[in-house]
Image (cartoon, rainbow, N blue to C red):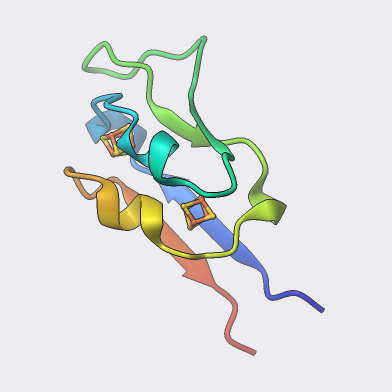
Length: 74
Ligand code: SF4
Ligand code: SF4
């Protein structure tokens, strides 16, 4: 069975730059179209958690360290 992964975004510090959107090989990150954070930006969100491979590209690209990736180890 595939290992479970979880990607979460610290929405209030995201500046909506979309670097993570472009970096994701699975194309499962978008800027939330109907949400604004406290800074007035559309924050990144994941749209298909199950498709995430925990590759870490989004995490590496984010200049503001908004992204946390958790991966099941057992
Ligand atoms: S860890 Fe990889 S597959 Fe998962 S959301 Fe980030 S870039 Fe996409
Ligand atoms: S790279 Fe970071 S700051 Fe830029 S949209 Fe993604 S989560 Fe937000």
